[in-house]
Length: 246
Figure 1 (cartoon, helix red, strand yellow):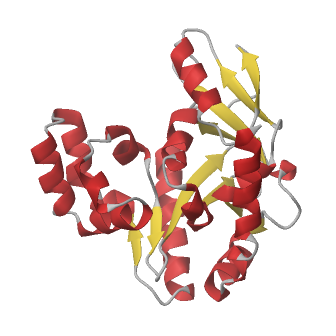
Figure 2 (cartoon, rainbow, N blue to C red; figure 1 turned 30 degrees about the horizontal axis):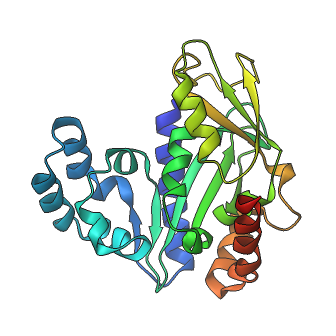
């Protein structure tokens, strides 16, 4: 199965399961960003962009909830192209991104530019951003909140390869909410779809997260549904702010 097919299959599976758990609309972002993504390819005219954003109810509300209404007029093509995958539209919207690995149970490569799109979201909303990691080895689906990434300081290598623009590496270091280790032209057993000549990747090991922060999908959704998943969020944002001030 191609990576894109696996991703779409997983998204459909997670969407179906979410509909059984949550008493809320579930949106696949791919279905609601078609027009805006086409504009990203063709034009960056502000008026054209703003009109399309206003005519996309899901994107419009996503931006208003996580940013502010004024952000709708900003032509942020990277955000629109990279953001995904599923929205659980409860009183506080939850955003879920799916990542896959074909070679590891716990280690996942994450394109730095894609991850950086989520760091644009204000920190006090990071508890509503979730990453689902799927391993095709044992078909496990593990999830973790975005704010928990500040707790894996010095445990995230950045891999960059021959031909990569140094500015892309600098961006990956600057915008990471964790301190990193730089690895040049290494071969960390990357997934076969990685373009080693033009991309920069963070590599996350789920075993480095604090105990209890990474859960399988069933337990994670249960805690999302009853609200216990969000307990203690303020302590993590305080940790992030303290780390950034050092």
